[in-house]
Amino acid sequence: DSLGHPRHASMLQVCNYPSLLPRSLRPTELSEYQLRAKAHQDFGAFTVLARCPGTDSGKLNCGKSGALEVKLPSGQWMCVPARSEELTVMPGTLMEYLTAGRCRGVMHRVSNPPAKSASAARRLSLTFVVKPDYSAAAVPP
View 1 (cartoon, rainbow, N blue to C red):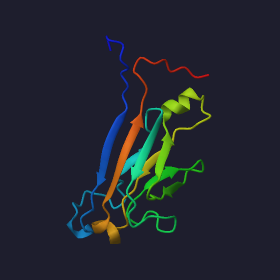
View 2: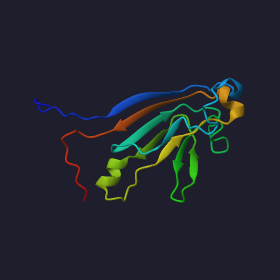
View 3: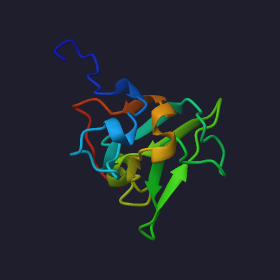
View 4: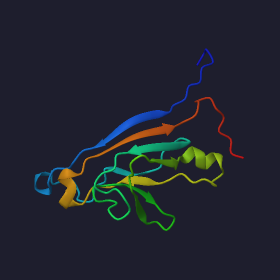
């Protein structure tokens, strides 16, 4: 700003993914395969996620209440289990740019839970997207 204070654009948000209505009560225009958050990469240096473990905690149960999924280089989507007392850190598109592609931004999405568990599948996460000062030069090596 005019006083020389940094003007970062970092963002802290609480993401609430409520339980879903039973299939018979949902509007017909909603697809069974609709996502809670569509596939995207976060803009910024990196994103830190604190996620509440649900019924899908651990590798074997991953995705049973809807889940964060990352896109692998093969094009397949993989569930990222939420674990207590752990953070998930994902590089963003700015980090990919600043490292000339050596550190890739993560394509990710949040899937819906399977129909049989949708009515009890509330998810909660705290997201912190780190972005630099607006006036900082973004120059790759």
